[in-house]
Image 1 (tube, rainbow, N blue to C red):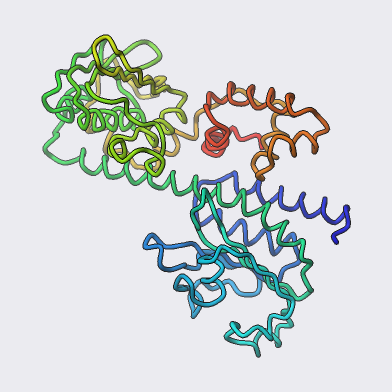
Image 2: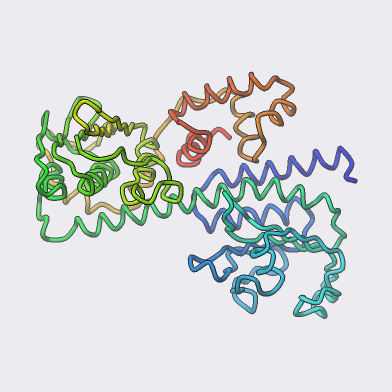
Length: 405
């Protein structure tokens, strides 16, 4: 059994690695921070992470730290179910061995003996019943059985970070695709309202207030909203400009669209899921609301976004195409510039423990407070970060340089 001191120490090491993962949304950086942290904090000779490819048939080596850092070679691509790594992913079973050279699945036992590597621990990365990949650690010293429990704590946070990175990547790809399509010559020098009207097609659009220059991120979100409204049977839409916010409101027939991820939405609602858009709007401090109006058997949709001041803004509206020609990097800068009220010391402690996968009861035990006090702090955190869920709150902290973790 691990001594209590060693267990506390290793959990603190997991916490340090988890905190490093929360500073980026880059998948390459996340996987390398994890393997570097394992080598640094757990006396491992090297560590590696394979992630499942989109075809769900293979795993590709994404990070390798320590003694062996190359991402090519025989183990760079492993079929699902083959080799020990492929079987860990397929069967979802963690493995620990302290006699690595004698394992039948090891391809180069002579190299293992030469490097005096004895310990091996492999752990499947699973999020919401979906296998994302495998984490493996190698050590010259024997590993205790409890080390798998320590890896379990780390992998909980790692899978969340990977999922957030994937969500961010999909969002950026959509914005890039929109940017490419809207920069075509057919749009010329259209204003935002004119571009929205073309996107909406036959749906009439009205504008309330004088058009103003918006930054690229805000413009892209409004255009994404219009593209989704086009899928619905939308018969009314208006663009509203106020001093410090802009809104796009619409009325459409049909069922209430889904705010759940596509994999959780019903088949009928998958094509009009507003989940990703809602997350992006929230990240900018805006709101996306949907209500069913039974009296007219229709739905009301409204997206409201705070207007970010633009230093070069003039009284005359600038061409929409000028905004859309900006570099995609400005999208990330715009999202990262959002500030939220600073969390208190205790709220930061709660978020740190949430980030490593602890439940309310475990957090209460760790901080020597009651379960209800934990819920009180989480409620305050969600309010400050204008978030509906804990995952969304963590996502916002990761998206901003106001991160207090």
